[in-house]
Length: 560
Image 1 (cartoon, rainbow, N blue to C red):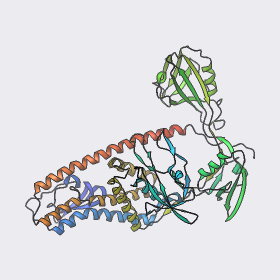
Image 2 (cartoon, rainbow, N blue to C red):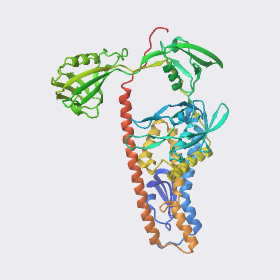
Image 3 (tube, helix red, strand yellow):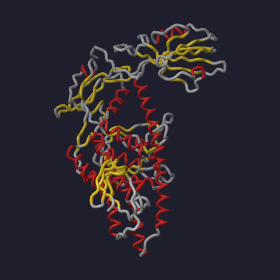
Image 4 (cartoon, helix red, strand yellow):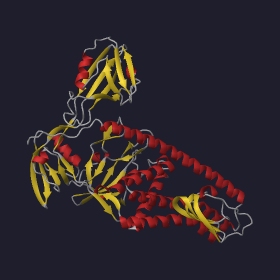
């Protein structure tokens, strides 16, 4: 034996005893045993040996050595699974439930396309339990989503299809659902199957907001929401729908308190949830309109009248018409300092200033971008302003009690779940009926990114992901592909059947070809990892921008 390594890649430290190198390598993803008589894999395993003038090894030895890399992956994963079993892993009721909490009537395929919700169209409703997907039992909502994404079913017309086994009021029935392909990332353009359902929530009252209808109705911490106006509640979204449908009447809320059902009447209150916006529109000589949306940015400490256009604030660019025209150089987040020398002190003030500008009059906007002032001078055919009022919704003023769970899953169940997930994904990739492709796989950049994210969120999630990685590596490494250990086993078996060794030049040529293919695949997948990262960053920026639009709910101080 030439080398015994825990991990792959460059050596961190090690020692040599009886001609065998024992080492700890950089990437802690299992390990391997190296014999110089096998095909040289130094480029992958972090070193190279001299296999000349060495005695041949037996078929059994070749098979044992080839399988040891996967064995080390599995041993390492099992040790980590034992640790997770003991300390537990984070979960929630939403992840583990089979019960549908909410069914969307419509879903968005991307930023521009809205279609009917597939689950709603198929007759699935909140409270239904989904037991199987395409005849395979599902273990909770996360597992259900994975089955849908990796599904390969197709209708006669070629449309994606999934056959669900659904339980409702104790009766079991089969439901055919036709998932839509929803865009996950605006840059990578990945699309996956989606049917428009969310899991049942734990509707336990954590606290009531001061001066809200729930506050005055004496809802208590620990109360469990059961129904509203006779509609069973499995999600807070359903309560929102009930409130929006009949906001002018009292809501009769059924709750469970100390195992007793209680009915509480209350009146939902219309509350603003966004700031108002200012719209600056300029008409060109070609009768084309370009515009800016302006968002009030209040001074620190201002907590009241956030939905009032007269509240003093500086004005930031929230959105810009895509065509740009007069405003091409303006970016979201820039601050409007003045219009023709007048500094607007609020949205209402901004509207008044624009109202004084005559048609055809030259306009100078002074803008600021991170303390870098710049000006825009243009002559519109007409310049107008509008105040877009704050958006409102109806609320009763409750905050749910979070329901985190720590689950202790034994290592064998962990292994079974991860192995099933791996084979399900591989099967989907090679199926003509699937909507997954190689571009959906995760390469080194994506793996590193997930490892970093989990390390920040919860180390137990990091350990769970490393378990999944090692099981994936073990399975992939045993696939009968040259370069991988499974390929060594194929070569050894062919040589055994032939009764003589395969020519080294042939093996070297095949290995080299598949090495190039392997690294090409890694580069291809890594390209999409980077695209996903770019898309996610764009999404995060949009979320931060949208977050500036929203305001805390404000309730009146009087009882309804």
